[in-house]
Amino acid sequence: MKRPTFLTLLACSLSAWAQSPPEAISEADVCVYGGTSGGVAAAVQAARMGKKVLLLEPGRHLGGMTSGGLSAVDIGDPRTVGGIAREYFTRLVAGYGKTLEWDKPFISKGGGPATGGAYSIEPHVAEQVFNDMVKEAGVTVRFDSRLAKAEKDGANIKAIVLEGGQTIRARMYVDTTYEGDLMAKAGVSYTITREGNAKYGETYNGISYDPKYQPRTNHLKPGPTGRVKGGQGVWDRDLPLDPYVVPGDPKSGLLPLLNAGDPGTPGEPAPGVQAYCFRLCLSTAPDRLPISPPTDYDPKRYELVARFIAGCLAMGDDMDLRWFSKHDALPHDKWDFNTATFGGNLPGASWEWPEASYDRRVEIAKEHENYHRGLLHFLATDPLVPEKVRADMKRYGLPTDEFNDNGGWPHQLYIREARRMVSDLVLTEHHTFGRQVAAHSVGLGSYGTDTHEIRRIVKDGVVQREGKTAGGRDGAPPYPIGYSAIVPKASECTNLYVTFALSASHTAFSSIRMEPVFMVTSQSAATAACQALDAGVTVQKVDQAKLREQLLKDKQVLEWKKEWGGSGH
Image (cartoon, rainbow, N blue to C red):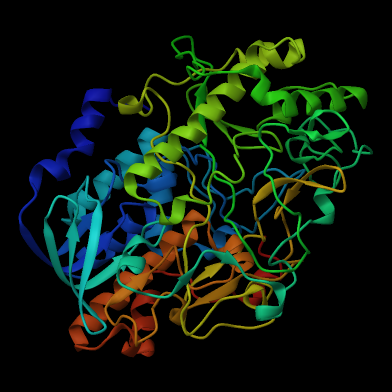
C-alpha cells in the first residue's frame, strides 16, 4: 500500500476547514459537537439522510481515539458491529488488502486479540478515512471550535456559542465528545461519581479491590505470548510493593506516582474516573524519531517502578518490555503500545479533566505526556532496569509519518471516562450482564467490564490499584443499548442526543465505552435526530417502530441472535 505524504495528509485534513471558514452565525439542521469517531458516524449519517450538517471539533483532527493512537481496537464480538462502523473498518483495512471476518464469532487464542476484529490500524490512515467519509457525505467541518455556552428556550437548545464568538443555530444537536461538554452546557443532569453498589444493586461499582489484582508473589510464569494460563498478561500483575520513601517508614512520606488518602470501604460511592493514558504508536523503522524525556526528568519519580522490577526479578522473572506495555504489531514496522500495571496510565491525574477548561485540559494532557516520556526514558536508560528491557526499549521511537503536527506524539489523550448523563434510563451492570434488557435497542455492547484503576493507593501497608476490574459478564451474550440512555430527560433538553457520555453507571459504562459501540450509537442518534426533525417532534417522542425500520435498513445490528451462541466477549 502506497502511503500518502505528510503534505498530502495535511492538505486533506484541513480541506474541510478551508471550505468552510468561520462565520458570525451559522445554521444547520443537525449540529454534531465533537469530531470523534462517533461524531463522524453521526455527521455522515445525518448528511446521508439529506440534512444540512455542521460537525464541530475543538481540536484539529477527526476520529478521536480511533485515529489518535488506539490502533488495536477493542470490539468484543464482531457480529455486533454494523452500519457505518462496519463500513468504516472494512474500508480502512481494504487499503491494506485485507477483508475483515465480521460474521465469525469472537475467538481468543491464548487470551490474545479476537479474530474478526478491526486491528492493525495506522493512525494517519484511519484519520484519512474519516476525512474522506465526511467529505464524500458533504459534511461541513469546523476545527478549533471550543464551546463557550448553550442558549436555550425552555428545554430546547436554540444555539451554541463558541469561544471565538461564533454562534451556531441548529434544530437538532448530537454531543459526541468524550466529556459530554455540550450536554453539560445545556444543563443536562450528569455525574462524575462512581455510584456505590447499593444505588443500583450492583456488585462492581464504587470503591473496588478486585481479587484478580490483589498484590501477591505467586504469579505464574508467562508463555510465549506474555500471558499465563487463564489469559492474564504479565503487563497486568500486582506485587506487594512498599509505598514509602524509606521502606517501612510511613513518616518518610509516599513515593511519587501514589495517591494519598484513605483506601475506603469496598462498594461505597467515591469520586474519580478511570486513569487516562496515551496509546502510543511507536516504530522500529530506521528513520524513527527519538523519544526525548521531559525537561524536568528525574529518575527518582520512577522509584516505584524500580521496586516493581526488583520484585519481579526476585521471583525469577526474565523480564522484557511487555511487563510495561502490552504492544501489538501494526503495518510498516509500527506498534500500538497499550498500558500496564506500571505503564502509560497515570491514576488520579484524570480526575480534573471532565470539568476542566480547554486550556487546563491541554496542561493535563502534557502532564500525562511528560510522565509517559519519562517512563520510557527510564526503561531505556536507568541501570536499575534489566539490560534486556533497556535494549528492547531502545529499539522503539516515534514514527516519522504519524502525528506530524505534534512531533510524532498522539494528539488525543485516551479519555476512558468522564461525565456520564443521568437520564430516565440508566444502564447498569444488570443490563450489561444480561439480567435486564433495555427497550428500543439502538445498538449492542459486548465487551467485558473493563475498568482501569482509579487510584494507586496504600492499603494494608502495600501499593494497590483501587478501582481496577475486568471481566464480570461471565459469558453473558451481547446486550442492547436502550434508546432512552442516549436522550436527556424531557424536562431538561428536547433536541439533544448524547452518545459517548450516555446514561450509564460507572461499571456498566466500563463495558459500553468501546469505540465501535460509540460509532454505532452515534449513527443511531443521528438517524433519530433526522426523523424527529421530519416529524416535528422532540427526541423523546421519536416513533420507535420507524426508527428501528431505518436502523435495520442501514444495516445496524440491534439484537443478538440465539443461533450465534451465548458468549459475546
